[in-house]
Amino acid sequence: MSNPIYLAVDLPDLARATALVQSVRAHVGGVKLGLEFFCAHGHHGVHEIAKLGLPIFLDLKLHDIPNTVAAAMQAIHVLEPAIVTVHAAGGRAMMEDAKAAAGANTKVVAVTMLTSLDDDDMGQIGMAGSAHDSVLRLAELAHQAGLDGIVCSGQEVGAVRHQWRDGFFVVPGVRPASATAGDQKRAVTPRQARDAGASVLVIGRPIARAAEPDNAAREIMATL
Ligand SMILES: O=C(O)c1cc(=O)[nH]c(=O)n1[C@@H]1O[C@H](COP(=O)(O)O)[C@@H](O)[C@H]1O
Image (spheres, rainbow, N blue to C red):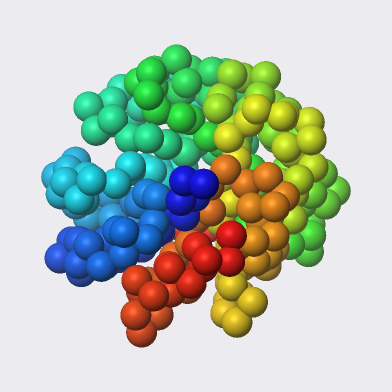
């Protein structure tokens, strides 16, 4: 089995980010660079991390009108990311144009409902129904738009896999049994997420903040 763990590098400091990736690179399958990193270091930072030899997941969560998102996708084309995120709430036309503008080797996946939200939060932002139902609805829209897959929690990935057999499913908010969930409200263990059908597990703090990140990554991989 190839390693499905993508380390979330949520650090604004390039030297620390590079050292972290270097320390765990034998025990993860890829690196996720998010807005915090990209706003601080841009293309240069992505090139520096890419030199370490792991696939890059550029988590920009693009969400704007179709023309703007397509132009942003074209601007990151040269970085050849393995995975890029857009928000499913941007709508079908936005997702279609994002996919059309992406490189042939880039998977475009849609963020559905953030794993930090539960049903109460959904009500507060005016979304009717459960997080589970919203994820299934947005997954269907992303599928129709021709995307490669979605981002959802481990609580929904089984149901989504059932309706979209060959989809590519990114699951963040995973926590080893011993770890605290923190701000992740729909957390499951790495093993549960994998068994339910996750293609990729995004893991940040349980590895990055461990006393020995390489050991933490190795131990998680051993549970899969
Ligand atoms: O798109 C994401 O990667 C993402 C979507 C989501 O619904 N929830 C979520 O936590 N993430 C990201 O996944 C990572 C989770 O980090 P940890 O909670 O530290 O493991 C962070 O970089 C989040 O930005």
